[in-house]
Amino acid sequence: MGIGIKELLVVLVIAMVVFGTKKLGNVGADLGKAIKGFRSAVKEGEDDKKTAEGDDEALDGVVTAKKNEKV
Image 1 (cartoon, rainbow, N blue to C red):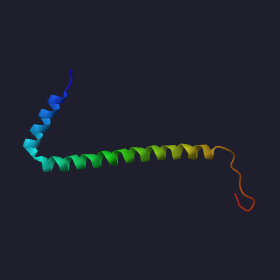
Image 2 (image 1 turned 45 degrees about the horizontal axis):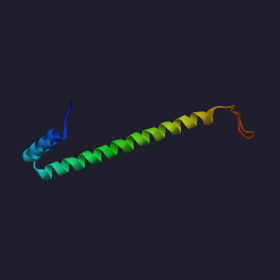
Image 3 (image 1 turned 135 degrees about the vertical axis):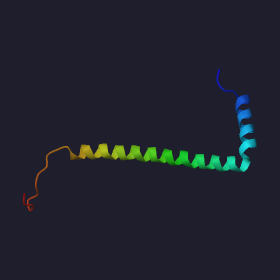
Image 4 (image 1 turned 45 degrees about the vertical axis):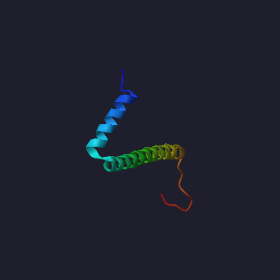
């Protein structure tokens, strides 16, 4: 069964009566900012992971000392 449009409208009307429209607007804006921040953090984490995986590939190979460098 699930929640239909009528049930969602009833819940929205009850929330508007209890909290008021101004407070609901603020909650909606705060929720939107939180979701945006979460998405950017997830994207940043994926970019860091790709960068770290790329660094591993660059380190594969033989390391030799330079001619002027003492070992």
